[in-house]
Image (cartoon, rainbow over all chains, first blue to last red):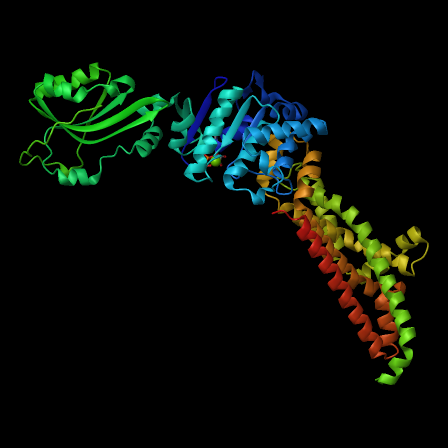
Length: 331
Length: 226
Ligand SMILES: Nc1ncnc2c1ncn2[C@@H]1O[C@H](COP(=O)(O)OP(=O)(O)OP(=O)(O)O)[C@@H](O)[C@H]1O
Ligand SMILES: [Mg+2]
């Protein structure tokens, strides 16, 4: 992990995400290997050194884990008390932190009186109190509704930008990764199977887990209805992925003009990952075989990713030729 | 059976005896609670911390301590009271009287308090303790700043249960020369067939238990922010 980045970790339930993040602050001891945080191997630290090292690592939790006996103020003050900070300094630091997370007016509320989003804000303020270098987040938004999730993610991103804080974010929601992560690791059965920029993973998922997750969020499965309604689907079915600027070019129409083929856009989606447009189209291309080949080559040379799709067995026959529909344009 | 005339005649004396016996019971119960809670609390904390998965997991301390507590709790109070007479003499110089009764009462209550404390502390979510560990808290800080404050309402209710149990035990202690309401009930109500005295002591004990419970509930509610 590079300093200052938001690093996502995604994987199915039981993949070992929590275990990995808990190893980073030694809530769980790895049987083998080293864990280097800020140049220090924390597996080699003694109890006291480890406690000091832990102050450099903030953590937020799915179920917030706030002390119910303390107010929002008291919860944020907790790590400072542990460090032995004098009362006066604690007061000003806590006030500053509560302002940062937008809760200065709820300082005297107990966790039971706060909403889920507010509790997580207190959790974030508490995690930031000791000025950590890294913030670990284990499913911090999984218990929140989409709107609240969004606002918490914005807050994390703001903090990442303004404090230069490195964030390791664990989730099983690809939407969360897409929204704020710079890079992502895909974990499966306790192993990291894939690491790359979020855009990479979205556009070229290699592992089956990554494929499943990206398919989930982009919903690129061809709807069953499509197969049913196009019994006699003509030509080759292609999945064309656009990344970055190529998404903005009218590729399909130029291919249709250049080669003697027809293109029928059956399904498509355009999305943004980290401010980069990213899209996928499912297109049926028909025409003479050499022309179709040429069209595919041309698209590939333009930096598009073209995959041939197999029709499911039920819709396999090519009985009578269907009449051509209109030609679509991308972008 | 006594008539209403007798009761009327003896009311001032009866009231005096009742008041004195009540004071004695309160003294025995109050003092033994004040001794048992501070002694039982650290034991309960130690049990929770050293148990498997606890913050100071220890495979020797936990089973040994747990065993001792179980032995302490399984000895019937009346037997314990007699069995520790030498110890009581050593501490207060006599084995008879209200103050002497405090010794077996406290000794019997300590393991009870330890278990109550243990179960109260176990109610705290593991996540909260883990969060404190992740922030670099020492075990001692976790005990003082997490375990005890988080369990405070439960600890208050546990103390209430202990105190009420001690009211019952103190009546038993009274039966062998400890004084208090139990003593009054035995000597007057039972041995002298004074049903009115018996009823009065029972009423007094009921009131006392009600009062303690209400006080405990009120305090626990005030401390609970869940
Ligand atoms: N690297 C590993 N080696 C051996 N066992 C592992 C490893 N990683 C995880 N495990 C085991 O896998 C189980 C599940 O791990 P974990 O709780 O971390 O999953 P998770 O990805 O956080 O799942 P969830 O999404 O449900 O929270 C645990 O019992 C853990 O001990
Ligand atoms: Mg998990």
